[in-house]
Every structure is written in structure tokens, then in C-alpha cells.
Length: 493
Image (cartoon, rainbow, N blue to C red; front, side):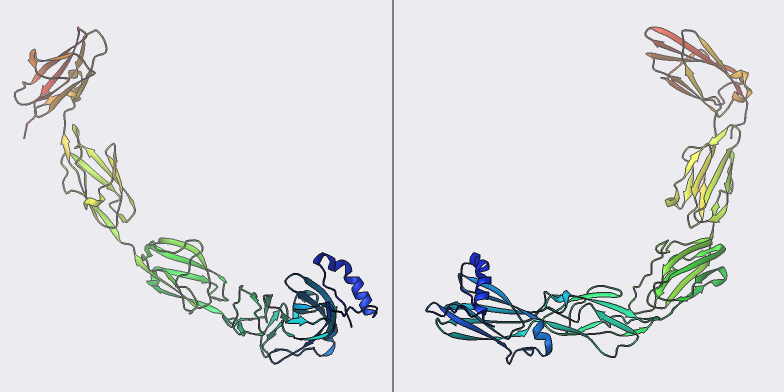
């Protein structure tokens, strides 16, 4: 095949290219002159070829060559099918020559270069210039090691160019799986992906893929229980393949619990993590008491051991004072498990009350409680608690005087026997509101005081009826109220 190519500006090449080809093939023109020379590209192999060229069989007929000829100013590109010697007439001078052979047989590998060669030629005018082009291998094979049993590894391509993405499909036979880390590529190439699909980038050399398959193992779940008479763990299933969801039911007898921190699920395989997460509860750390608990976990690639220890739940007591004069202290319940709500009821005797801030819970760090209407509540900690409180006598004659008009008013305690005062009582009178002045009179004798007055009912008070009056002034207007009360005899200790 003879081809004439005259070097033209790049925009002229396409327009004249077909005319040059037709005329040259017909032998009608020959431009060998003082400005042009014939270039004859001889495609072959050499010592470092890495392949045989031209290829054997009919592969040569399936090759399409792309020839690129360039210098500092010009570029010529043309294509030829199935040749080992290519001729063209071009302008004299120094040219860079690149030849790429594409195998057109497989559609998915059209962009893969079968072979590649290059040279620099100094074209002499008016003569034939032979330029040998050593074609070197530009494709690489992907092969599978023979003798792999119980499964198949299939590459997406059996050969390709450097940088091609090759995917591998892994197909184990039924009941088998690929051995962990057995999939290898020689020479070493980084493999990506998981499961039954992997991939790698083809390097600039041939590669061999190897793998091994093994029977899928069946793993067992073993339970070790201390104090098994107090509880049990039911496993379903007790043996299974990797990734099977394992159900377990923990049953604990009344009065017993799972000891804090004793529950564990431990894998026995070298590729397993140290902790197996429960799918519902995460990890059991808090002590579980009587009842049943259901959860699940995923079986790893190993046997598994479940450990648990059940223990008797300790019972703690609320200790009360041996004697509580002037009142009764009741606790419900008196003994209980830690975390139980405790209710304490204080019942004062008549004319007695629970002294303010007299309640103590020992140890002191567990003093937090709620008190309302002589009913105290708290949560029992994991220890005995000692409670103490003090009742005291008080006068039922505490009075708050309210001035709400321009009239005098009398408060008469003698009409209510429950409001009688005794020696040892204290009478407290408080005036609500703000006034300009306060004047107190006890049985007609002026007493010093402001908006309140405390009177100790001692033995100096005669048995009988007494009067206490307070006069207040607001904006020059006086107001008064009188309290009439009775003092009764009672021995004073």
C-alpha cells in the first residue's frame, strides 16, 4: 500500500487528505522532489518487545493503526488497517512519529491499545526513508489461577490497557464462602469492594488472580451462668451461620437480680471485636431485677460465650428512734430493696407539732427528701437509713390580728376549749399590715412591741380570763382589737 501525504497547515489536511490517498493509490502522482521524501514505516519487534509483532493468525487483519506525525509546526494524523509496512510522502525534515494499534475485535475494548511504538526520523528529500518502529505491548492479561475449587472468580475482562477498571464476580458453590483475605492479585494490586463483588485498576503488567473457598462454618452460642438457680438465659438458635440474628431471653427469679457488670457476650474468633452490641439495649450494665428481658445480637464469625451472674437482692431497713415523745413516726415500707420509694408519716400528739428542720437522715449524703403535710418521701439507697425527728408542744393560741375597718373587734378564745392556754405555753400575736404606731395592753398594762408580741404563759399568770389589746394608728385614725383568752392549770416539768 502506498500513501502520499503532503504536509499542510492543520486546517488543510482534512480537505486534501482523501484526494492524496486516491491519487497515490492509483499511482497517478509521485511527489519525490527536492522538498519531499518517502517515509516507509516498518513495524516489528525487538529485544525489549514484550510481545511478538506482527501478531500471529488473523489478529493483524483486526488491527487498526493510528499514525501521528508531528514537528514543531505541523501535525498529521491518519489511520490504516492491517499493515506491517506503511508508506507516505511528506515534507523533508525532522519528524516525531507515533504508531498505535487498536484491536477492533471486542467492542468493549475498542479504546484499548494493542501495541504502541514511536521513533524520530530525519526525512531526506527525493529518496525513500526507511523508519523501523518497534511495537511494544500495550495491553495486559487478567488470568485466574487453575485448580480453584468450590467456587468461581470471573473477571469482567480477560485483558485490557493500563488504568482499565476490572471487576471481579465471586461465586461460591452452595454451602461455601470465600476464605477471608484469600483473594489476591499477583503482582500485588490494591483490591476494593466487599462481599461477592470486588474491583481493581489494571497496572502496566499481566496479573494472576487467586482465591480459596471453604465450607461455611456453623458457630455455637454457649451460656455460662453463676447462680443459675436464681435465673436462666434461653438462646434461639443455639447454633447458626455468621450474621444470623440470635435471640435470647433472660429470666430472673423474684428477689434476685443480675449482678452489676456481670453480663457479657464474648466472641472466640481472632477476627471478631471484643464487644458484641445488643440490638435493643446496647450493653447491659445496670443490675436487672426479677422479671424477663428479651434482646438480640448478630452472630459474628466465631463461637460466642454468654456469661451472667445472678445474686440475691439485698434488703435495706429504715431505722426509727426508739422513743418519740409527743408524737408517732410510721414508715412504709420499713424494709425494701434499693430504689424503693419510702413514705414516712409524722403524727403529732394534741397541741404538739413536728419541730421545723428537725428531720435527719443518716448517712448525711442521703438527706434529700420531700416533706408535705407531715408526710415525708424519699428513695431508699443501697444501704440502711436511720431517721430521726423531734416533736414539740406548742400553743394553739397563735393569732394574726387583721384590721379591716373603723370598728373595734374582739377575738374571744374562751368560747373554744381547745384554745385554752396553760402554763408553759407561748402566745404569739401578729398584726398584719403596716401602720404608723402600735400600742399593746395586757390586762390594761402597756407592753412594748412592734407589729408582733410574744407572751410566755408562766406560773405568774393567774388561772382565769385575761385580756390583750393592741391599738394601731394609720393616717391619724386609731384602730383596736382585743383578744380575750383563758389560762388553765397544768403542771410544768
